[in-house]
Length: 414
DNA sequence: AACCCGGGGTA
DNA sequence: TACCCAGGGTT
Image 1 (cartoon, helix red, strand yellow):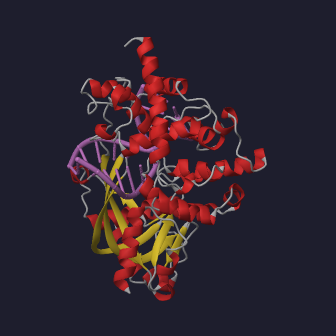
Image 2 (cartoon, rainbow, N blue to C red):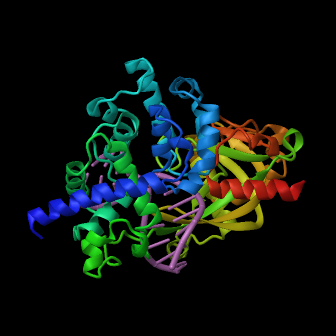
């Protein structure tokens, strides 16, 4: 296509899209004003997440953390709890870290220049452009998946949008056609078109305000675009989890633990669980045991927790973008914690671990306070472990799969 | 550049 | 079932 023709198509695109947006934009909570903090929160929530899913979370979040200072000063646990179920929890932790940066470095005012705003935790090229354009009306591109799809079709771009180079190219193109004084509206208009009309599977071309100049449609290729290489399928993992029921003063409660500070589901709460051993390999090595033994041994070695699994209680599935968990949940009777945690536990675990777990669960060790395997043991949960009842569900943040399991469990018990 | 990081809607 | 996301961080 000639440069002149492309430029004419670009001018048409911007003008028609703005008219369409003015008449058709949705009334969304974060479009009530131009408070950069509110725009920021909405943009972070909208990363990889649909508008309808975000709205209730957004309302709740803004009620609880109405200003950047409220967010900066809140306990992280509360922020995570507010984000529970929304996924990609590093977004919540980074958002709060960013809020604290804004308070400490910029007096609580979200900066309006690209370098400063891009230096905030959790703000990448898209979010920086979105805040600068929507809140401050600066002529910065905000290129997300919608924009890449719309532009790929309209300009018939065949770049693989899974590659970063495609986004960079589309950013340059988008920046070159932002209409004077209307950066925020234009960026939102392109995204709105992608969300409402130029949808991934079956674009509503007959309703499209820029149909007349759409090169992809003219070529009859709107359904083939954008070009996107496929991601690897998630790897399957079988997880063995223990639903450990308390006794005595912990009757009616179950044992949960907090995940490490970094990595998958960082700092969220969960049932104790482990990756199931490769059973074929175990049998080959002459160490084949059942799932009950595997769980008992695994939790002892990895977590310093002695329990006796009783029966399979439920199976749940949980799909991440890169892992597919099948979670087999076993009801288990509590034994004791090995003091000294993992290291001590590893040394204490013997071939007779399942017998030890049985003894422990039947209360032998607990009653006598006797050490096991040369190690002392206890009933008090170490740091990062808790006995919880139904009433504690409101204050601890769980990933969805464990939320389902625990809510199910408490609902059936009571 | 490749990989890590959730969850839900849609066809 | 498979695909799609209103991305950013880490290595």
